[in-house]
Length: 240
Image (cartoon, rainbow, N blue to C red; front, top):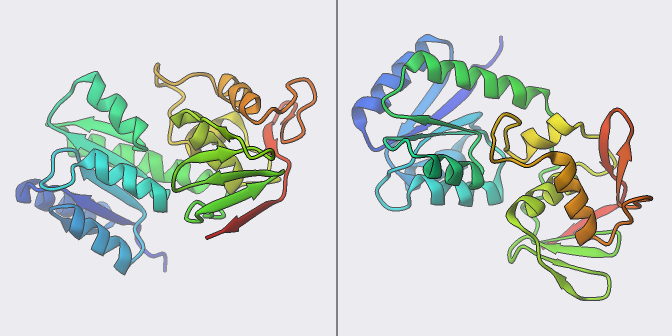
């Protein structure tokens, strides 16, 4: 018998928690509902969660802070809810690592459709080595400090990374020596190909290669596999 997928609902509105929990359970999901960040962290520590529905406006740490901190330890998909519908909120949510964004009020059927879509995409992605919890990641003579988010060259120089460059590098390091398509890279970065604020994945790979001093014509670290995507061709080692 297949175990129902587990949805964690984080919202300080008791009525919304009850509505969503009942609706999702009727549609075959198992749910846990909490009102704030501490409850969310406790739930994540206690059992497996397949997706989080996270409200933006919460007491204590808001949804943006919680989502950003979550991305340090996990790639669990996140759908962010908010009473505000401005583009800037949506962009910030995606920048913090949310997978999707739904303004309140919303139709539960639309949320259900988005949950199904995200979980379906997550299942299609390659397995993650989950090395992002390591404090230090070494590859091809380079070192990435995941605490300070600093990239250090083989010569000991600190190389600055933008937010998207850091996320892309982390994706490659979590999947070394494995071909990743452009769509997979966008999904693993928690970006969306249809989002107008996301740059082309090819441009981002080109910029990351530049940071790594990887020859664009004959790259040795991030190689192009014609017709398929890209591959990080390096041994990856982690340390605390």
